Amino acid sequence: MTAAVLHSPGDIRIENVARPQLSSSRDVLIGVEACGVCGSDIGRMMVKGAHAMPLVCGHEFSGRVIDAGDDVTGLNIGDLITVPPLIPCNACDRCREGQFSLCQDYDYFGSRRDGAYTEVVLSPASNVLKVPHGVDPVAAAMTDPAAIALHALRKTKLTIGSTAAVVGAGPIGLFAIQFARLAGATTIVALDVSDAKLAMARQAGADAVFFDATDALDEYPDGFDVVFESAGVSVAENAAVRLCAPQGDAVFVGIPLTDVSISVDNYSHFLRQEISLHGSWNSFSAPWPGTEWTDTLHLFASGQLTWQFMVTHDLPVTEVPRMMQALADRSEHSSKVIFRPVAS
Image (tube, rainbow, N blue to C red; front, side, top):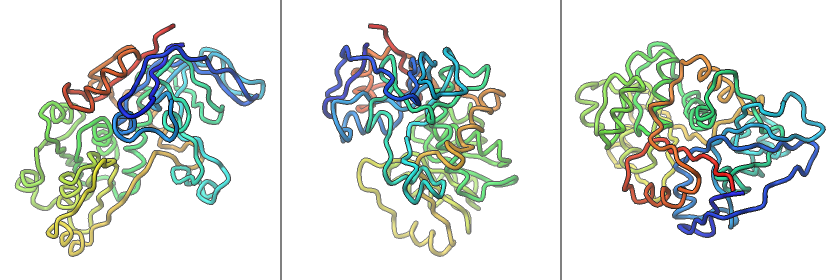
């Protein structure tokens, strides 16, 4: 079958690889429908590499059940499914506490085991989540980034009447805008350095958009109860702290590729205004994989969570090498990039 195989950072090859086979009575074979690009894919495939290579990357995916082991129940051939990419060990202290995002001995599609930039993926049945009727396969493939936004916001005091700012208007930030509105936020602003991304933030429901924190605070001098950061660069980290109202919450999702630092003034703001800073990792909770996933899917099904406007590229998987280079050097505007399988 055709796959985009990572051999080393920047060395991505389109190859014909062996199709996986059922190896356990609790396994499921999935025919990939769509696989999205996560920001972590760019760093993994173009800068840092994966845990072991060669490897098929891609962890934001949906597919259809094409075969299942004898002990698999609740799934039928042809069912549309999505796959939480982290495979918890279910044995460590964190897993026993239901904190699956913090599993100490996890496996992971697309970084530690082969992912979905290909045609067929083998998954444990416990990681196969049936998609509600009416959800598009592309939306199902975007469950992970949406659930990441929801997982992060649930660490804050976001409630009816809150004000919120989203720093970084990529797909996760765009979902955060929508979740904040659904939670009852009355004022939501977005910050980014891209006109195109700020236009998408407007589509997601932002009341106002800004290029930097200074402009936002000129219009909203009291700051914001909740600030969601999803860019992973120093300017965004500083903006997130500075935008917080007294005793506000800033939650950080962006993954940096270089060192980040906080200015003395912003650190002083954090201390003196008693701001709570939260790190957020992955998207899972108990019962596995968590209501972040099931709530997201139900909101997709009801149409309350929109996604179509985010998709800027819908490409065959043979385009992975070219597109990853374009994403790394920022030669093309993009928001959500989707790859589709190509039959060999």
